[in-house]
Image (cartoon, rainbow, N blue to C red; front, top):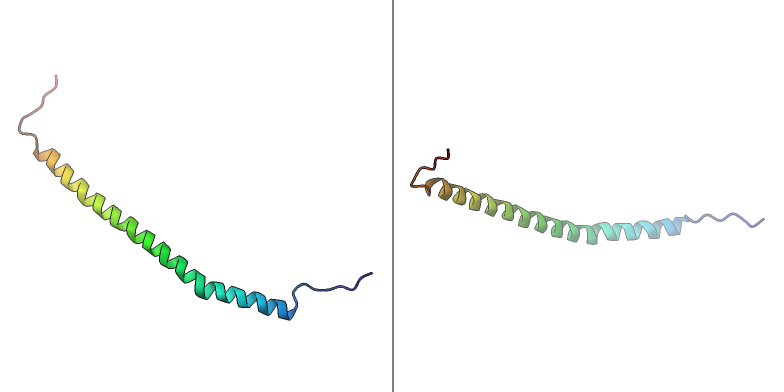
Length: 71
């Protein structure tokens, strides 16, 4: 039988954790910055729509100079 070899040798584990550390320190902040920019843009859109809707609702309510009755 062939001799048993482990895949996770200390050298390979060190190399794996080196790449994980690189990924966490350099790539993850960029992803978080892009996610934050997207969240801010959505928040600005919601705020704009909320102010736009209040202006339109106010105009519709005050725009009627006559009374409408349906029989």
